Length: 409
Image 1 (tube, helix red, strand yellow):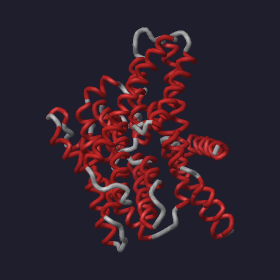
Image 2 (image 1 turned 90 degrees about the vertical axis):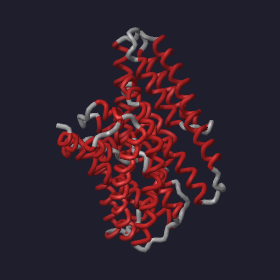
Image 3 (image 1 turned 135 degrees about the horizontal axis):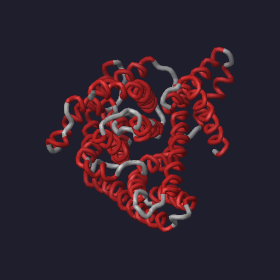
């Protein structure tokens, strides 16, 4: 595993360099496009050397994408994103963030799942309604990594930026719980029991909030107490992220939510007057570097996943149709969410379009799809998920800034 990770780090560094020198695209998008090109070049080796192609494919399939993302990268990336978010601004937008991250994810799951079920039937693919809802659950959460990396440069109004970033930081925890609950029904691991689902959700989300608050307060106080030792402060923050994420997994609570809360509290604490400029700079630079490096690693992994997909025209068509279903569902849930919000917090028509287009999907969706039981249904869902994610990051990611400038001149 260590040698594999070193190889991925080296490849991501090389692709980041190529992007910076030649493509000059936003790093996450450029790196993913280049890694997809690398995958296509390896795929082309099928026509030259069949044996070599199968060896490369077997190697790509040996990469445990889910473990790398959920057990390591996710905690670091969420903390690194949250530590730079304005906590006061987020609290001002807490109502829309909460509604989008809960009601929005649940409503989207059922809208996308229903559309996916009928679209699959139309093109002749057999998939049960419950597994269609599984797809709806894994594709509904907007990806915090993809959103954070691109919105910093998009120039959206602050209140909209906070809404989108805040939602993306919290909704993956909700999406994962909904995904696991529906998957357990689809595989008949549990009988349908709304109280069981509610208690699991309460334990995951509530436990994550509590653990994140505890670690955030401990980290904030420890960091402020070593004001003249910035390296130690950085070391403390890294220990909190890695240790806190491992502990949350051991306690079966949401490590994602815990790291977001801890990051928000520690980041807010850095603006205290007692904190020296030197310490603040060390913390900001360290977590910005980690954020950029691990972002590149994640998007290289997303590109590499392509080589593991067996080409199937029906799966591809379903994936393309799913893009429209996901965008339609996102727009509808934004409008529906307005019903639960005060007039001052409701999104206008133009803002609803921006919120729809800026709701990018990313690595979390792919990791959840890859965790499904082996079989034809998994192949269908993984293919559709990959098509939606690639379109989301490349097409939506490259145009969201232009859309914001056009609609909000």
